[in-house]
Amino acid sequence: MKVSYWSIYAVSLVKTLLLPRDKSWSRFGIVRVVCLLMRMAPAISPGVLVVLMSSASLLSHTVIFSLCLVYYIAVFGDLCHHMNLPLLSVCRNVYFDGVYDLCHIGHKNLFKRALTNGNLLFVGEFLDKHQIHVVACGQEYFDKYPNTDDDPYYGYVRKIGIAKPMQRTAGMSTSDLIRRIQSAAPADERNDTKKSK
Image 1 (spheres, one colour):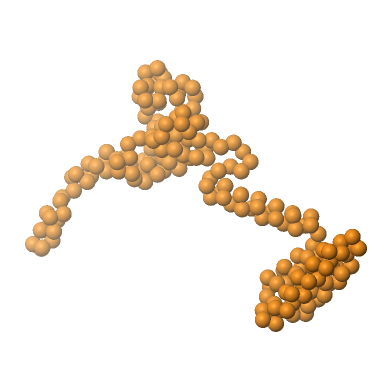
Image 2: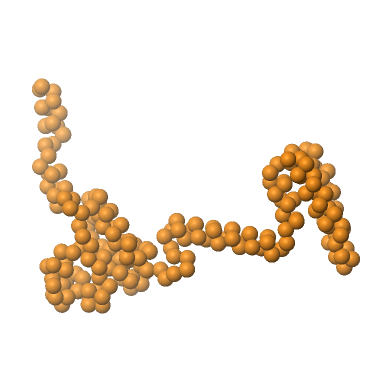
């Protein structure tokens, strides 16, 4: 490790000293900085980072610029992936509404299915404010109102062609969930039956 560090240091110092005459101030400045840094070298053990930074002086400006460009593209790509935003394509907003007083797994499955039609999902927001491209709604509205003029809820979005029907999760409904909760015995009654046994 130390041999590679000192060899890279020697090569970079020789490369600096061999700069053309018109770059004499640059050569003088670089030699001074390298010498000042080397005065601190006994206090700092040469780690991997020092070797990498020393080797960067051997690279051309094009390579360094390319590495920086790749780094920033990777950062923006990671941010876009994390936020579900397309980096090089059109962003499609999906609108979804409903009554979510008891949000359950069926609703979450609907949200996932609705999100497959675009990049951003707005739940219970307004169409014009967010420039919605797809409106995800329940299949029952298409079945109940085959004619779009009769549909009081999604008639407009069905007419303009941005409504997409979503299938419900089988066996999971808020109405059934409320019925099961109401039919269950209160906690006091359950505790009394356990104590009597």
